[in-house]
Length: 207
Image (tube, rainbow, N blue to C red):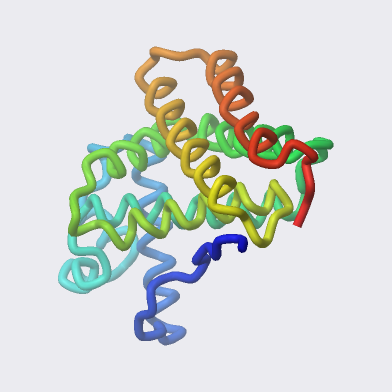
């Protein structure tokens, strides 16, 4: 039996249209500040001022800077996912499609290195209190990979491969951001780990 993968966010009271618009402004302000000055530039008071919300209101949405930046990463990944869906990868095998997808996502982050560094640092610093936000980042990354695989009902082995691919992608981001890996090295690592997909489904079956 194929394993089920949860692609739903944790249940929470739906935001009103006004609350959603406020949240969008907050995330936009966070991304803008991080793009200009990285992790240290994202100060809660400045985010509140830029998004035109009260500081207390900001803390009700995001209890800390780490919560905010991890949520910003989830938002950025969701935006990337929409862009990727408009132009799906063209590889013949699932491994090729996932590698292409992750490198396209990586290059999108590469265009905003300060923002990428801020988001990855927040993920690294996140403790248990940020688990729901971290889980959303992982869930979004999983959806992006499964879409590239063109797979709706992954087996346990395939889900395990996806987790390893996620870990490798995250590690590759860290090593590149720290200057310890070139883009060429990142590409080789991503292509290598994506071969795990074909090992779990040698015939490259879809769906």
